Length: 251
Image (cartoon, rainbow, N blue to C red; front, top):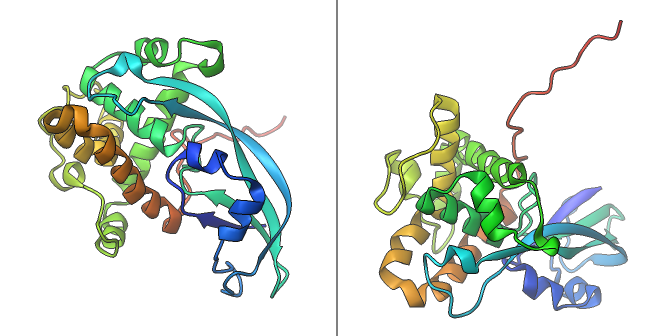
């Protein structure tokens, strides 16, 4: 089954629409024949993702007022009316390889890299209810897998972002140094430090702007999500595993 990514940066916006409304918005092109407006929905599947609940008056640094909770995300399944290939339509806020939405991923990364909290303490702060409970390793793995992905795909990322207008902020990957506003890296080993610096690429613009805008941060934050949502919609390389799985010979 081929995957078609529909640009949508916020889980809440996706959830407020019916599957029929989303299906009518899908322009394509078909991943196989490139036909436009050829998607015909057959059924809907549901996946659960951790999303953030953040108020419109939220200010940068109010980490305790960010709450994560599990949300249903509808996935449209259908086919192309021209070539008949099976198609799955997913929103661009779904970062493949993680259980977090793009919004939650950005906020968790910012909170971790600015506050300096441990992963366990950060989980306790952001996931204090039954609806948002998760293992702290869920947050760690999501941030570090994306960080590894961004760190290992620098050249391709720069080339892609040059084609987007306006492009996402990529300061950290350009300098590979700690930007003002970030806490000291918590990673000690070279490979984990590379992943942490890669994750900072995703939020470097947020940290710089967050400290200067404070109460006006929310508008800039959602603009940041729209830019990165475009990146994920056209750049669908698989997120790498943190650790290589070893296959044991049967005896």
